[in-house]
Length: 319
Image (cartoon, rainbow, N blue to C red; front, top):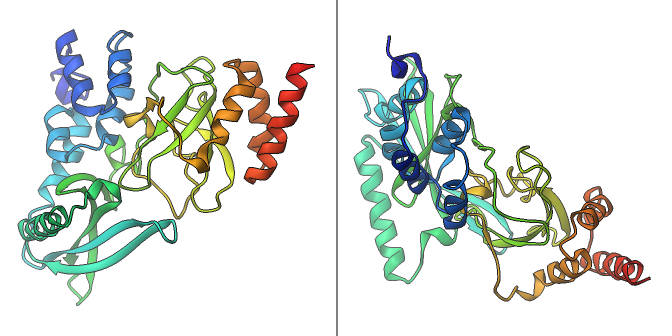
């Protein structure tokens, strides 16, 4: 039995590995950094492919073993048999209530009709000057006849634009493709004191975070950062590699921020400018960053309370 049938990662030379990073990792800074590092472990590469915001068809080209079987199975279920159908829901981030909203669109007997309907909606949005990445996605449910007049749920698909990107089946295990949100543990080039762009569109608006700690850059929770929570407008800390910088359940991005992570050097919006004050207090010192994390991590601070805390720490630093 060859390696691919056993489920082992196929041989990957440098050029192939770089193409893999270019395909599945949108962040230019992350790609450039990882191309200078040792090849990622096999399990991390599997998670990188599964969790990436690219199409299932592209993932099927690169996956192997049980992962290949999982994504091929999901793609096969896009063909409806007699007694099966699809239901479509529009989903979007509502700026007014600062959470996700869903609207039942229509049932369809063929997936091609689902895609045609979505593409017509997207074309209309573009004509109105809108961009789906600013807060629009789609959720499709596959249903099969249960033989007793009821429908049985087969699979859920999520589409970014007209690209079928993620799925979740009721049955299946052993592959990151069956996880709700794979979170590959990727090393990063960022250092304590950096302000990062957190971009998980369309599931949430772009925001920014101050990196407090980098640790050994290996653990999944070693990157700790400060950001402003959308719903409550309070300040929280969380692990960058996970989705802890979003306070669910009203915001639950389907991919980790590391896919589009980058340094931010522009002008912050007024509501986020306390990050600059925290950055000055920290001064790029991870020890000070760790103290800030301890002071903040157990509480969701208002801007007023965070301002007082930063003034107190700045005074202590000058003593």
